[in-house]
Structure formats: C-alpha cells, structure tokens
Length: 458
Image (tube, rainbow, N blue to C red; front, side, top):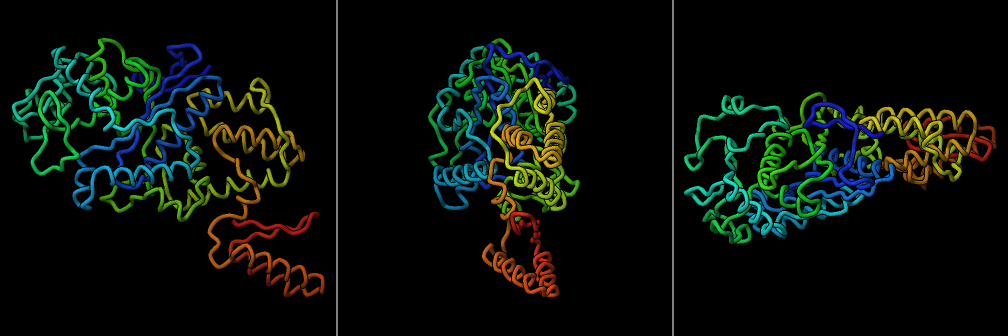
C-alpha cells in the first residue's frame, strides 16, 4: 500500500483516497511575472512524479495546478515594462509551459488562472463574512479574523502566541487584530484598470490566499485528497487556505498535505539577494533538461536539494550510465509485473512516500545486470521502470551524442573518426592516438566494438 508523509499529521500515513480508485490533487503553481526558477522546477517535477506514480498504481488522477496571474509583483512589473497585465502574464505563462515541457512535465488535468475565478472568490469571501470569520475594513479591504478560527496553526504547528511574539512593530489600523490577513484588497489610485474588479466591497482585487481556496474547491470540491507545494508555502499560504476553506465549509478541507524541500545552491538557500538565483532557462543552457529532471528526482522530494555544477555533472554521468546500458543491450518490449523482481522492489520504494532514491538504485542494479547478462528483457524492464519517472524515453544514441556541441559538431566528430580509422588501417598509430586524444580533450569518448566505432559526449 502507498504511504506518504502528511505534513498535517507530521507522520507517514497509509494513503486512503476519499473515493476508491480516484485521487484529487491540487498543487500551488507559479506567479507569472518572470521566468521560472529552480524552485519552480522542483515543484513541477516532484508533483509530476507523484501524479505519474499514482496513475501507474491504477488511480484515476484529477491533478490541478493553478496559475497566479494577478498579484502585487505582477502589477509592479507590468507598470515597469509599460505593458498590460495580460500581455505580461501571457508571455511568462508561455515561457513556463516551454520550461515544463523541456523537463518532461506532463500537463495537469486543469490549470486554472486566478483572474478566471474572481466571482467564486467573491462568493467565498461573502460566506466567510456571513459565518463571522471575515470583516470589511474602513479602508475597503476585507480581512480574515484569524482568532475566530479555532484550528489556526494546525498545519504549521505555530500557536497564536508564537505568532503574536513574532509580530512586527508597525500595526495596520484597519485590522481588528495584527494577525488577520487580507481576502480582498481595495483598489489604489495608481494601479492600472486591468488590476481592478468590481465587488460587493468596492473596486479591488483578491488577496493571494483566497484564490487557491476558490480554484481548488471549484475543480475538486470542498474536501479532497492531496494538496501540495513547496515547503515555503506551508505558512502562511497553506495555513490560510485551511482557515478560509474550512471556515466556509465547516468541515475538513484536505486529507494529506505534501511539501517538497528547499533548493540550496552550494549549501546556501537560493536567494536573489545572495546572487545565487538561477532560472530554469539559465540552467538548461548548460545542462540537458533530462539531466536536470534526473538530478531533481535523484533526491527524496522532502529533503533539501543542493544545486551546483558538480552535482549536475555527476547527475549527467549517472544518467549516461543508464543510457549506455540501453545502447549496449537494446531493450525488449516488456509488460511490468509489479509483484515480481525488480519491478516489485521499485514499487515498494515508490509506495514508501515516493522514495525515488531507492527506486533509482533499482534502476542502476537493472542496468548493471542487463549489461552483465546481455539481457534484452532486463534492459526492457529498465526502460519501462524509468519511463514511470519520465526518464530514459529518448533514443540512447541521441542522448549520448547530445549536449553542447561547441566547435565539435557531429560532422566534425564523424570526420575525425573516419581519419582515425584511416590512420589505423595505415598502421599510423601515432596519428590514431593523436586523434583519439584530441577527441578526448573535447569531451568525446570513442568506443571501438564489433559493430565499428561509436562515440558519445562525456
């Protein structure tokens, strides 16, 4: 049986869906005012892996990942650029889709945008006001009254006393309590018209937290199985989602909460202020996208992930070993038997809180045995199991000969191999060795075999 770590319970629990054979899952997506960074890459790849494994396990998965397309940062960037909010967000949504596709991330079942659900947000805010959990303020904002919701802090483990102790000195006079958070923001005079919506409380726009409550409940109902996102969203975003959703419905919102770990860069948390902030596009200029996906899945999703060129190079070498096994022993078409052998061990790892670390270890054992036994069956099993993780789906030769060509294009390499073959035929060993060394210094590995000479990039 599948078990997963439930942040809400602070322990691993056996997964039991609300509806047999069906999983409803919501993941907080991107705020689209800039290119996606490595933290976004991890969220996309991790929950793509989760959805893939749930489907491989026989579940019908309804996977929703939202897009925040109205926000303070979006408004600020649009004004700076002198463009409309829609033009800005459309451009970065397209860029996000390109990045996700490059990383092998499958499209979610639904990808709602916040601006499409303002009406639902109005209804939800109205219900919270009716339930005595929210109030309109004199400045036109609407706030959630945190102290009136008994369960506040149950996800993050933060008590109201802890939160009060951490308050800032400056106090918003419009709030009844400093801990209250905004549900609806009154329009400001200097904000563009496309950042304003009519509402029962005056012109304005939604707060950040209310959008996910509205969109998740629209697509999945007011009670669903899994809610995921980065660890940084646990508080306050996800805590506030619970307060809003349960405050409106009067019952449990989500059964299992999943959070992936932080990205670190050379053992420091990734941050623009530290100058160690990388977009997906910057990383993909240096490394193959499948290498990046492999690198992310090689670590357990809840653990911190330390990014460095050294770790990416190591991931590239490891993925090369798997592709080399498929090239050396062409895989047979196989049907996986999850009750037997390597597939059973792979399944046990994935059913243990999506333990891709152990699942990867099974892949490397398979690659070793496929090579040792020259078994097309084992090679086929390797390919089929890796495909469950979105890996090893390319032609091995294309992967092995891919990468940054620089001056050494495929044509130039092939010409050097032909010249080396000629030198060997003429017993000009010095020239043959010189050509091999020249290729090696350029990161080109020459492999002589019964079928002739092949090559790959290191």
